[in-house]
Length: 288
Length: 351
Image 1 (spheres, one colour):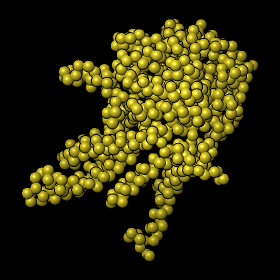
Image 2: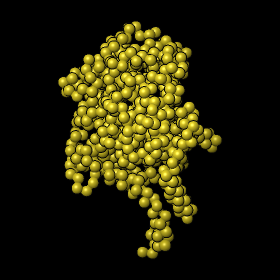
Image 3: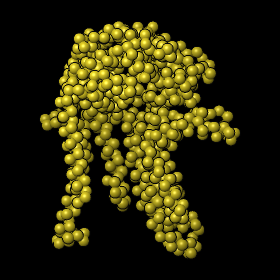
Image 4: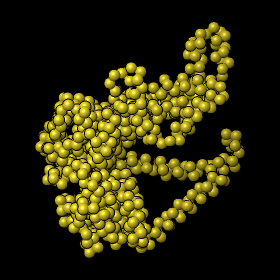
């Protein structure tokens, strides 16, 4: 047992020492609060999680309602659409970026990264100004003679979806880009030499070989999207998403136990998606 | 090893901050205010107070009334000297015994307040809370695109307003509006009345374009909605941007709220807190606060010194004639709040 992963025993001990602070932080800031939420979701309404508290599943039973099911399904639907649109727009972008010349590539990469330097909230307000009834988008459409009356984009489902895609798309572009970047071009050339049409070569070679990047991008976009509710609120969407439900349960109804149960269900759903991803051979995303 | 030192450094800095905090609390000339971000202006209120009294003001912020209550309970009514929050949570805080009475000897100018705004349900004997500002959600609309005349809540159901109304995304405020339109109390918990309100709310569905909490004035100014029901400062902001908008004081009744200051039961610098309350009640300071916050002022003495533009704005002055029609949204039990949330969830799902 002198060697483990090619490291000597001393090195293993030392590297364990370096991970100790991280492990400590993870326990302190992630595991303990989660255990508290789990505990709170399992005790009777109005009680806090402590020794001798009466345990119950009532908080979870209370979630078995048609309207709550609709809320969860609605959140999953929005997250699914966000992922789909991000993929349809993000993959071609990532593909072109990976295939572009050095200068253009670094320019495109900057375009993806620079928005991160500004708060998402500010950027979304920017979109609101662009989309408002007397805003620039309507002005251009009117100028081109495409519309006669201003379109009220804000408050629509589409405006919420746009904001979601806008905020999440870089998490799709970056893993897709690195997958296309790593792809051995000679394989595509070989397929072409053997008589494949370009689209056939794409479907048979490029797509399967970049699938890990696509899957990683989908998980990175889908999982945070399920719980994201502030964008819908800002765009005036008036949607009830799981996040709204949990917030109102905690702050308005002041029932922390049911609110915790809702949070646990959300955590289980997102963890389940991640597990399925890993089981089906997905890479470690480096974020979990 | 570098990371280790960085961590060590961070720990040392954290403990240094903690120590600085304890030293601060023993210092006499300090006042710790706890409120929303930007709710008391620095240059016109806090800075003059610091200069006149030599007391250093610390301003900590919370995002919601509920967060304030959780934090104040956690420190057992200590740490903070002045807290500024909303009526319903003031009531909860007083009932929980987390307030102390202000000192009428120091706060000798409490009489500056308009008596309509004192002795409220959250402080029946006016011993704990100094009202700071007051607000009333109002209907505001653009007569150039709305063909019907709007006088009250009932007019919002007019089919001519299809897809053109912006409402506040809050169960209690908006269902409360529906209840007022039915001649009922905003705080009713009667299942039959609430069922009727849910039905009436559902009938409003086609007229609603946007639900948002605090940006409805922007939708109105940009033309995305032509009618909005929103809070006082936003009504005033909308009117600033477009003076042709019409403001409606709904004939059926009014929602109403007061934000007020109190001293927590174990405030470390209660005397300084009393001095600050006296300062806030001075006419010229109360006038500045109302002008700056864009809310109605509960301070009658301030009306003598307040700017003309403020006095002439119907949004700010209208309340004095209608105070009798105003009703608070009060805190209900969890089970009753749940009834309102359920109606709201069902309604939003149907949109």
